[in-house]
Image (cartoon, rainbow, N blue to C red; front, side, top):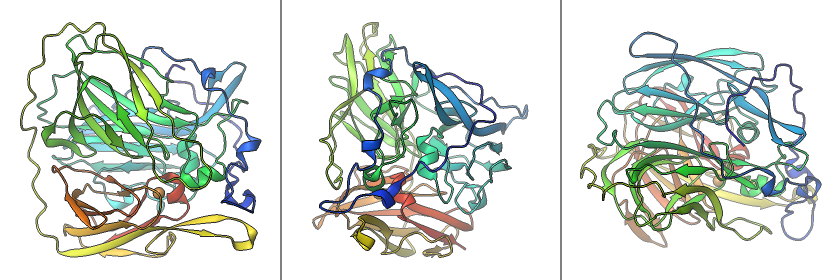
Length: 496
Ligand SMILES: [Cu+2]
């Protein structure tokens, strides 16, 4: 499948009532798994072609003509793409593009996006990771009705350079809107970037669960509990594309885990992998010699890839990762994400990277402490299995403020995962610093300072982070397994 821009399909029929969820899960024995899946036959993996040259991501054109201002339009609408012979697949996409177009700005810029919702559901555009005012954040509190428009406007301060993305975040239907295709990427470039001469690749990894009938399959009970994982892990909307590695023998990769729930334990054999950046931009110092890299849903990284001893074709693999899924689930398998062809590499051995990439100051002593707990609760109410996903024992309530802080105040957040599954914690409107992880009473300080907006918690793990917000208003924090967020694992922070 080649990623390109397709004409938006005007007047497409709205999709109705596909999400069956728990109401249809059968009772008896283990939590009911795959009961609905039996009704949806999935397309064979080979049904999508593989091995075509990797596509670049289309850039959203800046129409402002003024220095320091990025202005453009985004339209969310259904679009039909020919995936399987004879049956187009209806996706929902931004500007007809999968993934959504790249918004690329420079730190200090002001951004104005005129957004139009041509979906049959209310939606929002959430600017994941960006330090935007609460009313511009695209949270569930500010929906855009079907047929509606709104202007998103915010300025991105110097220091906010990093690797971000945007996706829907309405009160209901976030999982569905994302799995139907709505997710785009956003790069804030630094005015000074010591790695700017290294050829850059943008790799957006997204999930697709495609029915044999050519339709995007609905979530089944297993998806609702463990988070959705389709049969495809696409890269730039392509199945196992071919990446011709730069002749110089070195590339800079930005990688987005835009999956609903699939964790990416990335392995590229015999290559040199160096971590240089996280969600919120470059690290202070490169972290060399990585054998593998775990990217939880919604996380991003920047890595430097050196060809190493590779001469031919090597697969970038998502190796099996155990995240504590419940019920009867198939064994985790390795997935080939893309093929890297090193055969054209002719470069001399690589120079060392700069020892210091930028400065990241410690945030200082926290003024207040907050504690949140992720938990799951099985229930058999009415003879039907269900799982509640909770924060501090409660499911999300838009009419409840869970925590309060003050503008600019540094708080220490202790996040405890008292459940059996991994959950990636995400908070809106800011970047945080991880201080330490704690497991079985053993505390491990963060090995380096970095800006993040998403951090994974393994089962029974505690993570401590420091964070501050830049604006007054209400910001969401939640698990970024989208089905868990949708099932209640979300809370609200009020900044005064
Ligand atoms: Cu979760």
